[in-house]
Length: 117
Image 1 (cartoon, one colour):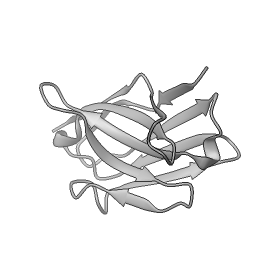
Image 2 (image 1 turned 120 degrees about the horizontal axis):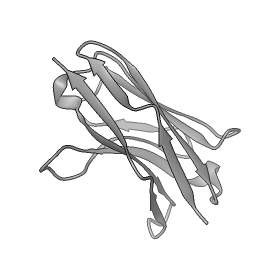
Image 3 (image 1 turned 30 degrees about the vertical axis):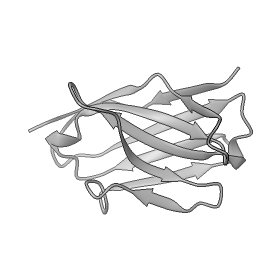
Image 4 (image 1 turned 90 degrees about the vertical axis):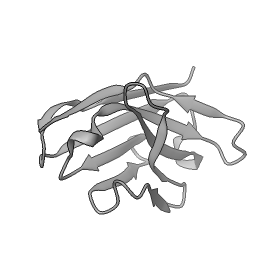
């Protein structure tokens, strides 16, 4: 059974930092592209960042220079370091695992990040 378990969300003031973690089980973690998405109230779920099996990273323009994704294949965990947080970063953040074919796609339950102004 595949599980993606996010942790690390919370309330932080603008300009602050948070680190999210996503621990995966039930998949061959090292071969999956891992990503972070977010969904604010009333809005669609958007991709924030992703990291491939080869550690190639992609970032949305809104977080470039502030967020960093990384993965530790020995721990089956992907991280999202978020710096200089802004109120517009407030959302539920979801971890995603996608295989190369795109046919296997898994989601975590989400973790709330709230940035106060």
